[in-house]
Length: 599
Image 1 (spheres, rainbow, N blue to C red):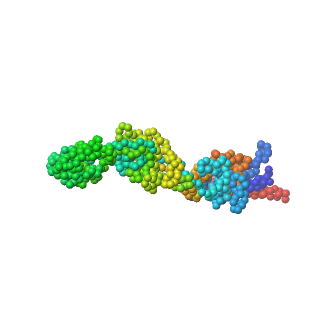
Image 2 (spheres, one colour):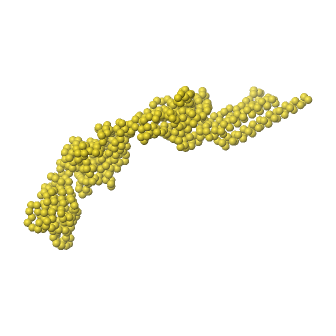
Image 3 (spheres, rainbow, N blue to C red):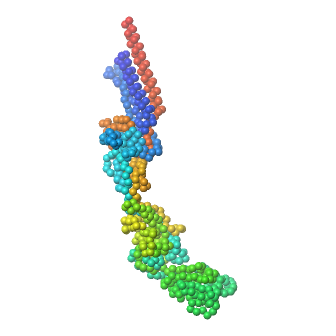
């Protein structure tokens, strides 16, 4: 090559190092640019054709080496529409060719970027800081399915989301095996059950036969006499007497009364008539009077100091006394009420307003949820449970419940207040439904004048149980419905599964679009454009969809420029550049020496 070859090689070296310096300069300048991909410099030696013994080091040229596959750090951001790609892939974007009436006109040319600082503009487009508009696949808000397969520029209109009527209610609860209703009494078997005889219209399922009246009983407290030694009161114990004697600890006196089902029995000193008792009569005589009025079978009796009162089947039993102390000596206080079971009409499946208080006293709350009609009008859908039979009553009985929902909270008179859902829920000894009931349909449900159509209450597998509960309540574990009122789009955000989520004024969050990521067989051969965008080339291949990384919402990818690394490159480049200038200086001196030979 000679001296002049050395000169031209050094000039090529200066040119290559200048090119490298330009890349280092650009990398450092963009060290804070979102998702910037640095450009490294490759040096290529140029070898002239010579013999094996005369090979030269040759000249040099430089070329760019892309780092599109080298990811920058992902940093959290406070903007809900910012996003970053963790892994391979690029956002698909377009840049408008022009604007008409401030609306972008797109030319259909797709570009690709990892710059994810997208925000919603006034027209409803997601635009990043470099002016590129995001593409994706819209989602049908009704079905939740993708509307197509090809990405398109996303635009979100500020329209109302149509109301959706309630079609199903997901319900999971445990019914206390012994409900603590207002009328329950642990001493009275079956007192926790709904008693159709207490209603003017039987609220049990339509067609349920009227239940025959049956006797009920109530036990008093264990009481002792005032004998010495003290003994338990028996049928022979006198209703009055002095201490010590086999008499009540508090005596009935002449003129005292005891009222049995409205029949007033007066205590007299002697010569008792039909509606009288002698003060010297016994507890057995009093029980005989009660049995004569109630006609109960079995009769009211006393055993081991405990009086057991029976209502009989003719009517409920009510007993009061004017002598509270003597009545208390019998083991009772206040008004004693023993209500027979059964009775009433055939099942109507409804509770009228006249029976509302009885229903509330004999059932327990089952939770409530706000439901919606087809126009989005809200209504409070309230449930209650009533136990209608208990396995504790013996052979032929099983734990059975009925579910009700409130029809009209303002009902009066004979208007319907509660509706039976029409299903007997029966449970086995293990607290599980037997048989299992997956769901019930509230046919033609109307609540407070609002028509809900035919919503379905789903219990799912194991969703309804009957276990013991110390509080005696219904423990509602889930009560959720699928309806909602109309709502206006207020904001959008990006989820970590790569979807654009719309946040509506009605509290709904719906997926509006799925962001598609493009990948390339040769991502480092993409052509760079302003604003961190790329376009496909023959060397990169066409965009491929479906194999990209994951999208991280409320985050941004930083530049992959390492300042320390770039400074190191800067030093090496400067030194190499200086060395090339030294070669030029030396070559020039040698040429001068050569010219001096001719002088």
